Amino acid sequence: VQLVESGGGLVQAGGSLRLSCATSGFTFGAYAIGWFRQAPGKEREGVSCIRSSSTYYADSVKGRFAMSSDNVKNTVYLQMNSLKPEDTAVYYCARARSTYASCSYSRSAFGSWGQGTQVTVSS
Image (cartoon, one colour):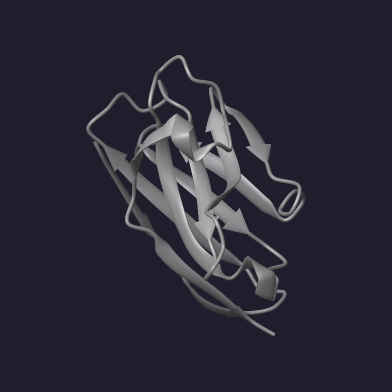
């Protein structure tokens, strides 16, 4: 199982970025996939999740972030708009441990993780 994030970078507040998570080694679409982020000195927190074309968002990003998937490329995306300095973090994508698992923001529900991509939003 592999998950590889890309698309992070430095952006000014109010700007946009699109993160990608390329996956391999499992049946894409059979598992929930989540985006998490971890800011310096803070716990890793769930941001968004997709399962069977249904998407879920944390309150802190609802209305600004949009998660999507491409079943041909086995890739999920996180479109991030109206970025704020508090969105600065390392962003990770992760696959649920079980095909039966529904979307969750609990880290323990996810067993495979990417290496992360840094997003920095300047004020």
